[in-house]
Image (cartoon, rainbow, N blue to C red; front, side):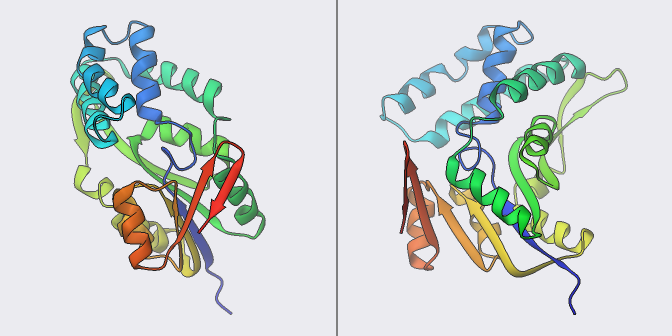
Length: 230
């Protein structure tokens, strides 16, 4: 008998969490004075264009990532981690019903729950713990000898390829892709969704939606209190 546990892999931002952990973190870092107000100016135009539906989400989130990386450098880890803790405590219940219930069901059925996100690891880990995941991966921002962020990202090429992370976790945790499930919302999740037996495009953007249709993946949309399964 195969003793390996089946894996269920989830993206977090926009898939489980009804926002972006990074966006909420940067907003709160500015509010708490850890980041200066100038940090908001790096992305506010892109944010307005996204909210007004004059531009896509990707340019907006790229600007947020750039602002975060710029102002994180030389910040004290403890100051940033404290704010991340606030965000998790206040917002860990702001999840989609569909993925929240799916996580609970898969855990009862003995699945190994894996979260892979491009948000910072120190906030992904806390959120994933609250949600009951067994293991989580996020972008690792390095710190120096004085516990201040250096501005460097460790193994960035690895975390940006979710299939690589999933493959490593399967080997390290003695998991199997037999019966596996994957859930994501953008094209950055395609590599990991391609690996699993049951791929679910949840509230997908256009690129993932088209890919899902071409490959006969499940498409699920949650809008207010209604869940559509296609």
